[in-house]
Image (cartoon, rainbow, N blue to C red; front, side, top):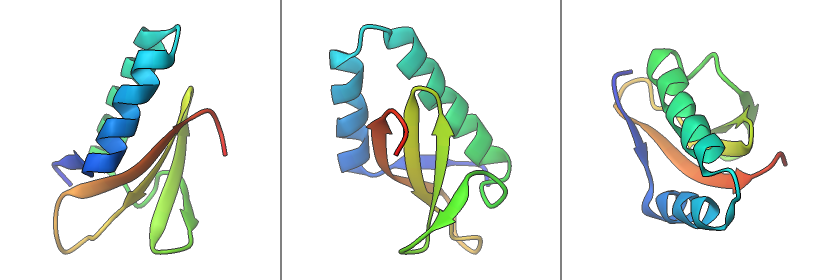
Amino acid sequence: MDRVEWVRSARRELANIWMITVDKNAVTSAANYTERLLMIDPTREGIAIPRSLRRVFVTPLTVEYRVNVRQQPVSIAWVQLGEV
């Protein structure tokens, strides 16, 4: 995979998280690190969950994403502050 895209609602939620959190650097670093992980081998990261999604924890974020190995990019569908 060479690209990771955030769906609009996940990007908005990430922005909301960034606005309310005290440690903005931690949120920024976690989002950037998550993107790097998913660019390398998204099928090996995280755990499989229902609806053909995978979930990965990168403190302080939980991210759910979809991998379509035939098509790119990886699509980040959901993000939350903290672990689920």
